[in-house]
Length: 306
Picture 1 (spheres, rainbow, N blue to C red):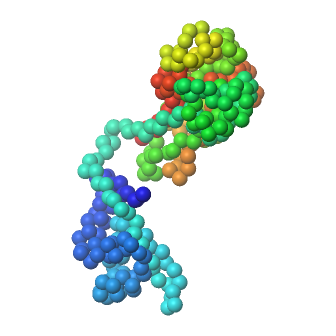
Picture 2: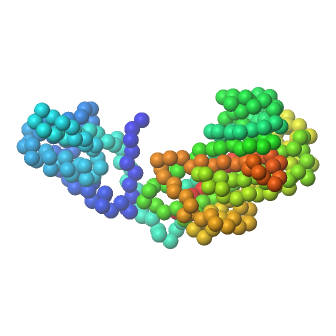
């Protein structure tokens, strides 16, 4: 799949460098030459029948615009610069960012797309149409079909998700919000079964919400017809918000946590863990609901605001 360069009017220096790069027919000929092969500066000069000194100047302009890759290697007569193609498409947005308007990057993660888990009976998963594996069978959580889960439950432990971080390094993240639907986990259901459900983001403990019970006295708004009425039906919407001023989980402040505790990068995922701490006062398990189960038509949603 081709590589794409995304730019807008905020990238003033890069736009100017691109203008210089495309202002010469010879530089365009160099780009066309590199599309199918890599060449050193001397080879480019020979193929285009131009002086090597001129080829070197053209290459510097293309480097400044970020249009080519270059690598210095040892040659028979010293070092030589190898040039290669970098982008297949340039997407230029003729708009600029308003500094007074907040922007958001949001990813919705299905509950079955966990990348790690530690579960204990009673535990299990189900899609919108059928159970996945068998109840209380830990291996069911590793079946390929687990990605289709719309509900999962465990008496203790955790599930972990990897979210992409899609904010470029030149943008400053001011706050983030994580939301998901959850409740406690009791056999069948029990409205009076508290559970301390904790959230970690990139290893930072972001707070604990005490769920009052495992809700099943009425059917969930989105619960499929085949799902038993004697089972967990819906949860509460849990909201974790972290800003430069602090952290809150369901509007209860969590002391000592701010955005300064996090160091996000496009080069690594953001790891979100949901579960019970081993020393929790009420380790009452958890149910997690997807967009086709429970009361809320959403998966696990993580948003970054910048």
